[in-house]
Amino acid sequence: MSERPRRRRPQSRLIPPSPSPPPEAAPEPPKNIPERKPTNSRPFLLDFFPLESEKETRLSRFYDRLRTGRLSTTRCPKDDLLHWPPRTACPRCHTEELEWVDLPEQGRLYAFSAVLAGAPLGMESEVPFSVGLVDLDGVPLRLFGRIEGKPWTELTIGLTVRVEPFEVGDGRVFYRFRVAD
Amino acid sequence: MSGRAVAVVGGVTPRWGVRSATWSELAQEVGAALFRAVPGLRSEDVDSLFVGAAEPERFAFQSHVAPLVAEQMGLRPHRIVQRTELACASGQSAIRSAYAAIAAGLSDVAVAVGVEKMNLPSMAEANTAMACVMDRPWDGPAGATAPPFFAMVAQRHMLEYGTTEEQLAAVSEKNHRFANTNPSAQFYEKSFPRDKLLRLPLIAPPLRLGDCASMTDGAAAVVLAGEEHVRRFTDTPAWVRGSGQYSDFHNLANAGSLTDWVGLKQAVRQALGQAKISIGDVDVAEVHDCFTISEIIEYESLGLCPAGEGGRFAADGRGDVGGDLLVNPRGGLLGCGHPLGATGIGQAVEVYQQFAGRVPPARQSPDPEWALVHNLSGSANVHSVMVYQGGGAA
Image (tube, rainbow over all chains, first blue to last red):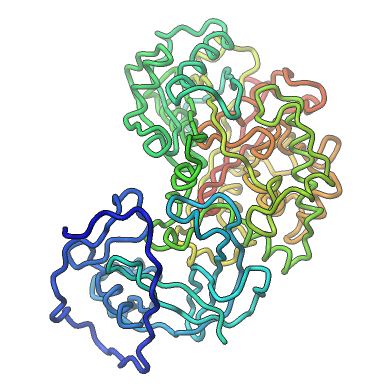
């Protein structure tokens, strides 16, 4: 690894969502994914962000798609079952033949709170931060995540939020939500 | 229940709180206290040891804790020795495992002990340990820990049923008041009147400091015995009559309704069904008040009141002395603190002492026959319930 270990997460950068993600009908083997070195720059057991590369997880396509601005998950075609989190085997029929589908970019706040004290390592400087459960539009999924864009005192149940992929700062990506304009 | 009858025949809870003691020292202390508390208990009687510990790797940089605890307590278990881990319910898991082993004839006399050391030089490290309970690669990066999750539960309960901050404070006031009768409680001799509770700082809105169980160092231990060994130790055994568990989900996305705890209803039905009683027969209950809202929803899920009326049940004192059911007389997790692996053991110690008539009058259930113990773990995704009967023969 050429990178120096870093204890603190640099400023996250936004990844603009791609304007119109092409619909993906069938599972495809990953193509031309560049081989990456392990991407974590902190000791793994002190790092909340997951390992994302093809070498490290069978769900690397989730992160590859997120890197292009698309939040996605797996779906079992046999059971017509949308999973969260993405899986390698369907929990109902146990098939491993799953497909990747993009998720809606918008949803509504079902519940929220804020962490005003008691943050884990690496998140202390982010206090206060808001978290919430978001009902994604049009799909039966209620995702948990950070809620950005307004202080917790101005959040309300039912507020429209957008999915926002972001770079962790060392090549990895994750997702959060931002209050829609 | 089939199989051999099993009872808790004694136990002890040393002081809980912010302790000037290491993880191992807490284990050694509870061992010494157990042998003082259970007359006639000899090391060689104990054939099996079950250690409830949620996260010694994170809190004490220590694995393989079952033999460590055996050594600290002065035990040489020679049938079964193991750790049980179920986060906040690790202690009850130790008791359930001991019960199952004795009922099956694999053990005659077992110790179930819980140990947790949560106050670290860096509380951010301790908070990191707590965060590992959640679905770490998915919910963890967002900062999911118990307080914001249960805050959302409270927010939904307030929205759906009109539950109020004052009703939450009623739970906290009751349990802190009971803790003042319990010298082992973290908040012994600390006063928390309702108006003070409502002025404490917000931790995860709408939950304030007094709505949240603390990070606690502590241990507790009980002895369980098969029916033919019970009378060697006590005349007031707490017989295990029912045991139920239900694991509903893990990732927060799969929680479904935040306010309808289906898993608790299932676990309670199992445990009461095995004991062949109904909730109305229960005289004293130790339930998992990790947050005030938890106890309110537990009133509802136990069937003590209809859905949505738990807040009013609390405010009307129906879980208090002289109410419908005495709930958390020990002081609960709110008043005693919540050393994860020790909590379920401490609850069983209270049940044993309630049956023995050995708790202070201010929290003694009058002549109790039936007791129920509940632990949830994680994001209320797992519920564990045990039912005990006092008095009578096996």
